[in-house]
Length: 448
Image 1 (cartoon, rainbow, N blue to C red):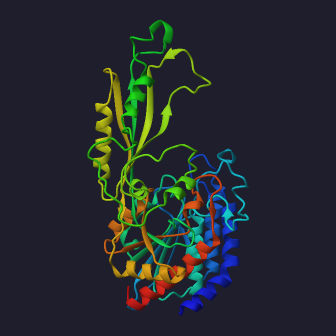
Image 2 (image 1 turned 180 degrees about the horizontal axis):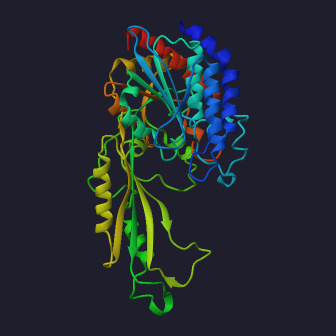
Image 3 (image 1 turned 180 degrees about the vertical axis):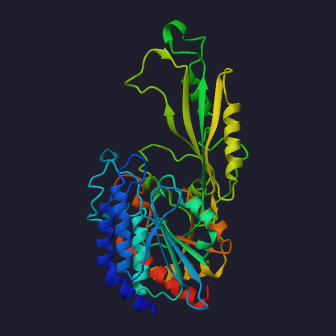
């Protein structure tokens, strides 16, 4: 199929693609415990219907360990043609109005900037739109084999990883296209080739047997929260770099993330400094980043005049691509234990250790993806990383060791995924459908 024919087909289908996206956004498919299951089930049914109308028969995939089923479908490869696995997810983050939403998060709303707003509009129901649009281009008869997996628990405790580990042959493919990423700026194509990993631990301090009057006992006896604060403060140096020694880090070799754009997207307040050493790209994609994501302590409203007997915090560390997550977590936990002041009792426990990801580069699939994106956008393609993590990718790589991984999507920096006023630009969805269709044509022509 010629490029102009693909462009014309995609342009003609875009009103339907955006209408389908609107129906998907209306389903508040939060798969977290405590949220109602009906919207998640409704979203899955909607996805299956959209795929059917795109010429692709899909159904529910029971992941055996419980949780929400994934959406699965398969078209066998024609003789001599490669197999392409398409991945995305239909579940979303919660969207409380007090997060700062200016429109109903469950109604896809177009604003004057041309973007469409709603929870999941980008992450990752746009991925569903890209994959279904790509299949629609070929009328259900692509020139390659297709395996499609759309997860229903990517944002929460996923059962898919264990299923892939148990059934690796089912996920074997030559190329895997992961539509859960995006460009930095709308209209400037990138390929994501590295993702940081993610480790977490909980640190708890104990100092006295029970709460004590801060006037009668304060001074000689240490307060557990003050001890914890001192420990947490050692995690960064004066420049804001992660101070845990021995963690893997390197200078980012690809495209740069412009600092003014970063400040804008991060909504940094006037006068607040950019912290850490190195470029924005290095600090986001190839250096460790430490944060305290939760503290158990009395709120200001509930505060009493007492020395606290115990306090605890959850510490999260994003790790560089290529780092061993268990080894990096061990260094973090040992560092916290060594930072314990005043002989207080401390307990540091493991929460999670998720792999970073390095996409194989230099293969024919990656080169075809680069050419397809350049053709779709009419611009050269840059290479970026991601500060976020997709643990499933390492599992898929182990299941299909020879596969190439193409990470792309419509989640550009202004999309503000996971935050208030999440949005997507329809041009990004359109360009990505064109690019994926071109990529499939190129893979079929090359035999991979």
